[in-house]
Each structure stands twice: as structure tokens, then as C-alpha cells.
Length: 311
Image (cartoon, rainbow, N blue to C red):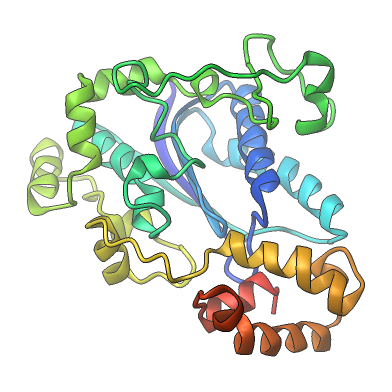
């Protein structure tokens, strides 16, 4: 019988997803791992430095092993890189009961909001928040699907994907086909309650509900869910949860685009950051640090700049 787990995989010294194509392939690799292990995906949230997912599975470690292997092969080949990607161990948290599952669903669906990448959970595209109650919330859109003959370009080698799994024009397998939407919507009950939960702050009542349900289980909080996240600052995540979205800070994706598409060809004459020497990366670090605000009206921090430059 499948059990429910919250799983998080993080990288502290480099980003896992340098551009939108990486985020697309990342989700597709997760979909393949879920299919291969006969698991069910309830929700997901992909950040540049880590990913979260809520799985119903018999083998969470095997599901993540298959995911990591498939995505690492892609990432290393594209970036001319060698070696393991991400931390050696992922964070696995068993989840039991209605209120514990609801809390986990809320936190995973709100990843874009927590990390200050969107003012609401629905403004971040690389997660599952827009999948649920899409018709009732007016989110159904006409899609241009990828022709079957081109799907292989966006999937792991030798992937055997059911024809029922649709792929959009960008190469992304549709989350609606991968996620167990029916089960998740049964937890929320109505679209109105889903909206309430997406705007609900992680308060004492949320913790009380979990304790009353099963006091032997750890209370699921934002701090617990984000355990292992690089540069974790819970106070900042809580401020983000209140919708205080700061557009002045550059995102990892924007910074990686600047590095990969502008700095590398102009100053290093290479195609990926992994082909540069350490001295070249230090040069780029100083260059971007001095000029980012002037050129882009954006701010960065030392930790962000170093992980995007793999320093």
C-alpha cells in the first residue's frame, strides 16, 4: 500500500535549474520516475536550487534515485559537467492524516510565494498550484500540443510515456495528466476552500489541527518543509508569505541568463559555466557585482552570485 511522503532535494553550491528548459526537463524526469515506480504525484514545486514534491509511493528513495539519475544525465550532458548533482541525500518526511496532508499540500503549492518569486501562489508557473480547480477558477486555456514525433527531444532517453500524457508546445508534460488531481481536490473540497488555503498563513490553528489529529507526528510547518533548503531564512519566507513581493532582487533564472547568454560568450568564449576556470568565474563575480545595479536596476547577494557562478 502506498504511503504519502513529502520529499525535497536541494543543491547548496550550484543551481539545479539554470533556465526554463531545465525546469521543463526536471518535471518531465520526475514524471518518468513516478511512472516507473508506480507512484502518484499530489503536488510539486520546482525552485532553481531545490524541488519539493508530495508523493504517494511504496519506495520514495527509489523514486528519487531514478529522478536524480535521469535529470543528472541531461544536465551534465547539456552543461559539459561531470559528477553527482545536488546533495547526496534528499529530505523525506512521512505524512499521515487529513490535516497533516493538507498542511503539506499547502506548503508545496505555495513555493513560489514562500520564496518571493510571485505575489500569490498562482503567479509562479513551475509548480502545481494552477492545476487544481482550474475550470472553476477560470484557468482552463486552449493548448498547442507537441507533435508526437517531437516528444522524444524533451524526455529522458528510451522513455516510455503513455499516449495519455500530453505535452505542450514548450516540451512540458502537462501536470494535469501527471498529478492525481482528483485526490487532491477531494482534500480541499471546493474551489473556494482551495483559494482560502492558498491565502492562509501558517498560524497556530494550523498546527493545533495537526496535533489534535495525531500528536505523535511532527507538526508540519514552513520551517520543517524547507529543511535543507540552501540559505534558509525562515523570517524572510514568512514575510514573503504575506505577499510582500520585492521585484528589486534579481532571480536565479535572470542571473543565470545574464551569465550564460551574455557574460560567457563575451568574456570567456565558452558555452557553459562549467567550462570556465576558477579565475574566470572570480572575474565574472566581480564584474557582475559592480555593474548589476547600473545595468539591470536589480540587486543580488553574495550567496546567490556564487551559486549561479558555481563558486
